[in-house]
Length: 407
Image (cartoon, rainbow, N blue to C red; front, side):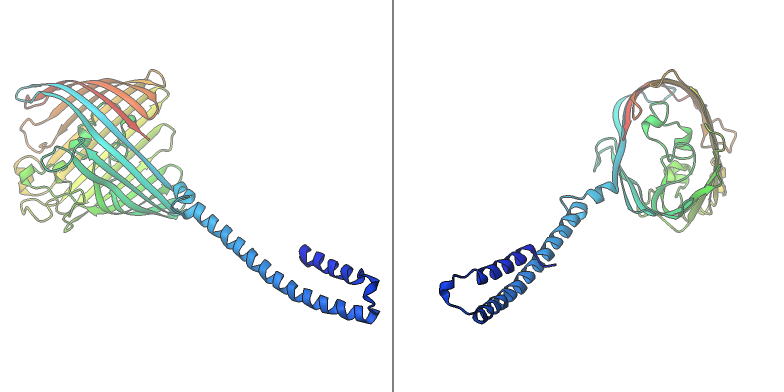
């Protein structure tokens, strides 16, 4: 069908031809010839109008397409990019007031211990990115006490709805706290010592991993990653051997496997095993392979909660055995009770020993009791009292205050 403007022009041409005054003394034949000439002229104009109309329609379509692109992907709109990108983070401020005994130092200190930012992006329904950047102790730089650390940066891909893989920098699947350590997620101002000195949280590494669900109750993780690099210079302590993927020695990789059971609501039972054939990365011929074994349980029923964990390292070689570091272990138990949605109380007993392989008294023991108040589920105010009874007599007793958040 012709455009309305073109139809109107044709109708006007016909009417004007037949409505010409009689004084023109034109015969019917002459009038028909005149009308034919005008119709030819109008047809030419019609074709021109059609071309202009098509060009206009193309421009409108192109403009609409560009607007659509800009609104979803452009630098000013970015709605689609923003929908697929997430930011978050957590932080915690601590005040420690501890009295040292038996040679231990007093501690009266205020410290913004951690400031962490998360950044994640979903590329498509199966591929995503996640990262975690942390500033410790507020200020980092030469001569400063703080550090800037990249704790996570990995790509994750879903093989199936129940199985996935990732590669990059990630937290290792071991213990209770290593992967979940945001302040509102645990009781106490400071992280428990067993999962700091034995596990040792926070523990991340570069490598690759697979994980997933095995039925409705079991989940698994298997990771191959950089290993520890610890020697006699630091008494073969696992915590001092973390390489943090900073030009990490990769001569000897480690393997970590975990299995968790959550078949009953409110209960989690899990265990991890790690193996490394040379915990010194070839730097110490008197040491060799190392194995970590960890078991934990979490129970929550109503207002009552209970956590328990045991972890042990077995180190081969005459070097670790000579100082008792061939066995390093620890455990803790932590009951808690929610007085309300906002208030909670807890107690924890922990024992750990980084030189458990000899008969020399080197155990460290600590009791913590405290309270938490959450004005919002993602914001927490904490207070606790700690009392130590270490075999070497060097104890720090006193109270800690903290505020933390996550978003």
